Image (tube, rainbow, N blue to C red):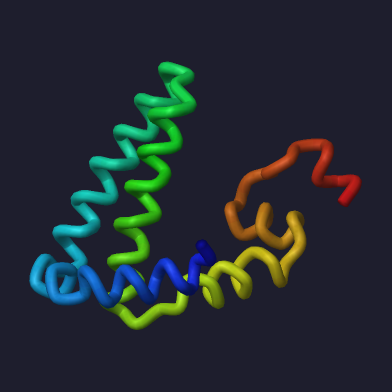
Length: 103
């Protein structure tokens, strides 16, 4: 399923709940899920990583829907329309180390 379609389905099914819960509650959920993802990565658990990434994306989509953000467009503009050096510079760290110099 494409991200845009997924986001639309989420809006249909969860918009009322998400609005009632609010972005601060969803940020708490997002933080908890990030911790669970870190644990799955630490344990080298691909199934757990998959599940926790899905939970993170689910929650991020809910937050995006509250603010009327088209995630597909936002991701494209932020990452696909830029090169790795631009992204690395924004993060203020050498994303690829010496490999970034060759890009």
